[in-house]
Length: 152
Image 1 (cartoon, rainbow, N blue to C red):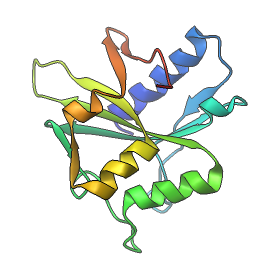
Image 2 (tube, rainbow, N blue to C red; image 1 turned 45 degrees about the horizontal axis):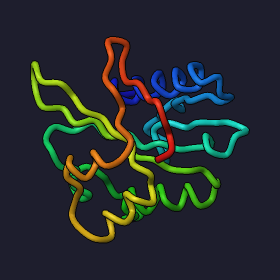
Image 3 (tube, one colour; image 1 turned 60 degrees about the vertical axis):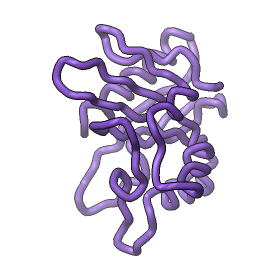
Image 4 (cartoon, one colour; image 1 turned 90 degrees about the vertical axis):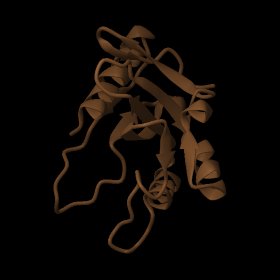
């Protein structure tokens, strides 16, 4: 499990606790013999928080769909596979992205609703950091990332 995925689970559970919301975020154990649809799942009786989150931590200022996402053994692109998973489970989807700029530079992280990500996927090769800034910002604190709102 990557550090960013672990940080997202902590961030999301802190979001539930701080707002006295019912819900729990977790990461399923990964195995090389089983497929994993998304990185983090959120369960809640409140449908706003019944979610699936794919996490990406990248160097640079742009996310590319051909470079940062993969295709499965049946040649299904990861965006399409996750979209299918979301449709079948009824979960809301998000992409959590962390931009790393190198040693000594502050990282930035954002959440983008999956349907917005799909629109970018259908219209071009990638998404720049400026486009992500229009969505949900994850604030960086000494304790990790802080989520103050999930809907925008």
